[in-house]
Length: 425
Image (cartoon, rainbow, N blue to C red):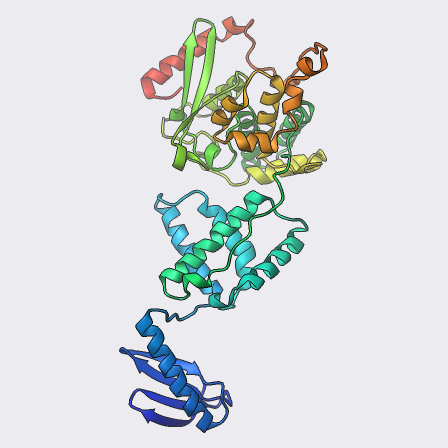
């Protein structure tokens, strides 16, 4: 604990003092009912008294002109922002992108700026931070990544301004000239079939009931994702039984999924996703697993009704075992199933980019930016003048055979009755 060595009163509202932990004098003063304490940076008492007068007058002028700020450390302001974002997310009125902002602040900005005063962050500080981040990532981040990071940092600066911890004029300019969007890591149909078989093999070798349940759920999760293009994560995990509908006309049937929560739904509202007919077996197995399902029940849950956050790890284990975790375009994850869906749909030549963008809840620009390598292949016949036959689908993409539809008509009839009775198939 520090000990006061000496104090000199200048007047009723201003004095200087010396403590045992420093050779420099401090000035303490009151303005409009609030006490302030500032270092004079002087070791001489006489010089400290003169500096105290200057500090007092400077603060008085800045208070009257509305330009006085009491700076805070970056970490303190950033953590305040994070807590506010988490609170909004918990109450359901926060933006889904807040999770990305929180991740960026925790992983990059707070570790770098840490205890630096927020008013000390200038253009040179930002340039040094950009270099540090590039070295850490071993690459220049994509433009979209920089925009997310910049938005997170701007929220911290905004909070500091609102709290009068910095002035708007002190906010540095942030650069978003990152690397152009790169091609996304996906699977070929042959690779996907290997992954699917790998999940089944892993499922058969499960040592505990819980592990087996996770791997069974993973298999259905993977099959559902690759046949809908829905984003793994928030979108997939918030699908309920009531979100799935079907349309039937004689021997024709189509399934639809209402995506109500995810990356873009806050701005675009609910979107209706049309499923590929290969989804039938997956839905059938899920129905059998949950005979007491209700419309509000989540679709992807374990046999005991609980949720799990282990699907990503289980999927990564399969990919690593098959040596498919790395690709020429980055690390493959569950999200690669969505990229595979988009790539396969473009390759089929049956779906326009405009329709696919609406189906996937993204923009035409994003698809053109990240999947431009596919577009020429969409028109291979026209560009080459050679009529190529369509690529055969893999064994796991067999889907619902129209020739054998009579064998499942009775089952579909039951699904329709279930939907009318309880509000879900």
